[in-house]
Structure formats: C-alpha cells, structure tokens
Image (cartoon, rainbow over all chains, first blue to last red; front, side, top):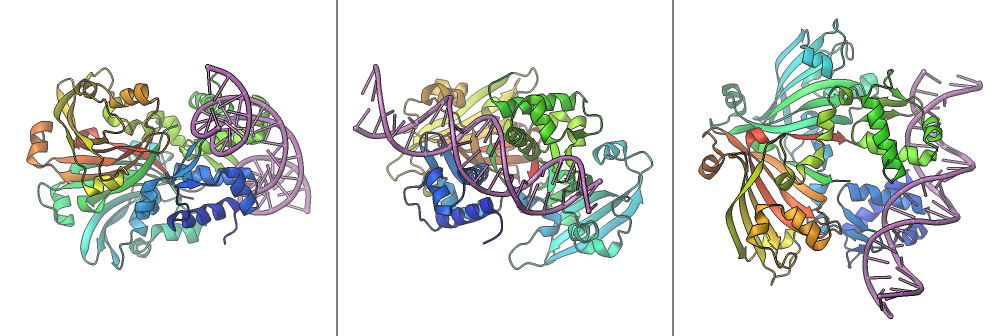
Length: 241
Length: 241
DNA sequence: AGGCATTTGTCCGTATGTATT
DNA sequence: TAATACATACGGACAAATGCC
C-alpha cells in the first residue's frame, strides 16, 4: 500500500474491478465503502470522483456507481491515458524497443515575439533551439523542435540532449514537467519530413505542439513534435461539466 | 449568479482574472477567498481544484495560487477546451457559418463483433448505420459514420439525422451525451475522402473515433469522423499526477 | 399517484500535515 | 525559526434524483 488514503482506494478498486469482483457492474455505495476501508465518506468520494473523471466509472445520483464496460474490456487504453503522451519525447517506450536520439541542430537564438509571449520572456532573453530526430531501433518516428529559455537551464549541454531533458530538469531543478498545453493536428508531410521519417509523398505527419510547464507554473519549453502518422494515436476521455 | 457555490466562484474568478484584477498574477489565499465569498474554505478549494485541472491556474503549496499567463494571453483556446470537440458533429459552429448535413447512407445492420463489444450489445441486437457529410456553407469538412443501437432510439427517422441526434436524444430520452472516449489520429486520404472533402492526393484526413456515453454510462454511439485536415485542431491541457 | 428508502451531490467547519518563504 | 499557504482527511447536515412498493 502507498501513503495517501484516496489513492489507496483508487488502486484497490481498480484491481477489484478488473479482477471482476463486481459482477453486477455496480460498486458498493459510498457509505459502505467508507466503512469497508475504514475511512470517511469524503475520501471515498474523492477517489470515486477521480475515477469518474478518468472514465473508469459512472456515477448516478439516487442510483449508484457503475463500471464502464469499456474499462473491463480494454483496460490498456485507459492506462494509456493522456499522461503517456506528455513526456512523449522522453518517455516514449514501446515494449522491448530501444529509443535513440540524433541531434540535428542545437543553437542559441533570439526568440520570435510569439515565443517570447508563450514562454513569458523579456526582450533580452535568449532560448536554445533544439532539433532532434527520435528513433526506435533505427526506425525514425519523430522530429522534435524544442525551445527552452537559457535562463532556466543555463548549463544545458549537447550530451544531455541525447538522453532525457526531463530527467535533467528533475535532477537540476528538482522540478517535474507534469503539465502541458497541447494542440494536435495533421498536415501533409514536407519533403524534409519525408526524408527524415521515411514517408511516402501522400503520407502525412501528425503534429503535437505546445507548452510544457514546471510544477510551479513556469512555462519551460515550447515544443513541436512532427510524428510519422502511424506513431500517434491520442486517446482521451472527454467529460463535459 | 447561478445556483452552485463553487461554480459561482469559478466564473467570478475567471472574470476577474481575465479582467486583469490580479496584477501580480497571484490569487488571494484560500482563507481570504472563503471570507470574501462568504463560503467555506472547502468550497474555495473545490473551485480552485477544478480551475487547476483546466490549466487556468497553478497551485503551489506554501506559496500560493498563480494564474497561467497563457490564459490571460489566449483565453479563447481554453474555452475551446476538450469539450467543444465532443459534440463535434452536432455542435460545430464557426462564427457566422451555417452548418449543413447531407445523408449519404442510412440503414439497419447487424453489428460486427467488435461493435457488439464496444456498444455492449447482445447477439440479437441491431444497429443503425448512418453516414453523413457535414458542410459549412457548401464547404464539406467531415464524413461521419455512426452506429447506434436501435433499442436505444427505436423511432429514429431520416429527418432527425438532418439536424442534431444529440438534441433528439435530449428530448426523447431526457439524457445528454456528455462523455466520450475518443482516439485521434491521422491517415492518408482515400480517394473517397478526396472526392467528398475536396482534398488533394497528398492531403490527409484527421480521424476522431470513439464511443459516446449517456449520463448513466450507457454506450450510445460508436462514431468515426474523418475530417479535412484543416478542420481539426484538438486542444487539451494535460495534467499528470 | 404517492410515499419512502436508497444513493449521490453540495456545502460546511475543523484538525492536522507539509512545503515554501 | 516562525509565519504562510496549500494538502489531506474527518464527519455531519441537508438537498436532489432514483427506484421500488
């Protein structure tokens, strides 16, 4: 068991749900759960609310809490949640495949005014421009162009680029980049895309671009990722309210 | 003011943030807010948590609550949140442009086993198959293929397809389809795509496909939407935890 | 149709823990 | 070290929706 009450409840419930312990697709009511786990109802509610936001369960006032059948049949895509796409550039892992990185460009430039705006920079700030090609076992799948203010990582060097910038941030700043604002769209591939990603002329790239934030809200990197179209499938549970 | 306390707080804070009332990019602390609004601190926390999940603010323990500069500079993309993509097929509205619908196909079929699984059907259930072309002022932008169990909407007729199925559900079942599980990816366009969406051979489609749920969790429709690549830009705030 | 038990939603107030400054 | 500010958790009260009898 971990440390936090509501997280314990979540992982325990997930386990039980997937193990098929609730054959009627219905969870016990909140008060019973509170009693079972020997916690307050608020903590149960907190756990259930989070699971509801993730799409694992549906709650219906006056009726009860029900399991999303999709979660039972296809647990994997839920674990694949939004999250796995965040550190896409650094954390991408396909079972058993080894990630590689080829640095295409690395320099310090003056940011455009748009970049200044997005990264919240003053006119005298400079940024690194980093272009990297990402591969899995010699199979290229992504061209990543990133812009990072030098004032955030003054000592960034070429060697760090070959492994994980996120890990470097973790160790250097003791911060994680756990939030981002992303736009996702598709485009016809340019001839450069075609060369680097081994695409045919009619094959597109999927583009994921946006801003990564540190925990404290500082915009830390603007990144554009151009992916071989076969390598991006973005799964998301949408919940209006 | 509306009815719910925490929602009132959210809309009031959004207003004030965007009006630039917090010049230091920092919100008052939770206790002050509770006092100002004359509510409990829990309600303030609830409001702030929601805003934090939406990416509008960042909270930092021991320090305070801070405004995401991006929200100030570009409020629009935040309002464009995930939500606006949900009822994409029915709710799509571009300023001043009139949506049209052309029905390409409408029949009742036996669902594939995959569809049976996704829509939680028993072997004897049938589904409508509905293919529609969506346009804005004679400009086609989307081919939508939808599958709906007939047992959910036994009286669905061709005329309803020309307007909004979601509105029909609202009136008929008194339910809204406010949740969905979606996958987003890109593909080279087929010749049919090219004909219907007026695409060049090298131009792709963006595909958004997945399952819509009713409020009570019933899977209600499987839908595949093939969009002219210029018409899909999916914005999302990603928040790991 | 009406009433009642069940179940989740909303909100309050309090106590204690933990990270930041 | 002390003050500040958010995080976690408890428990209770009442409201609102559902479903069954």
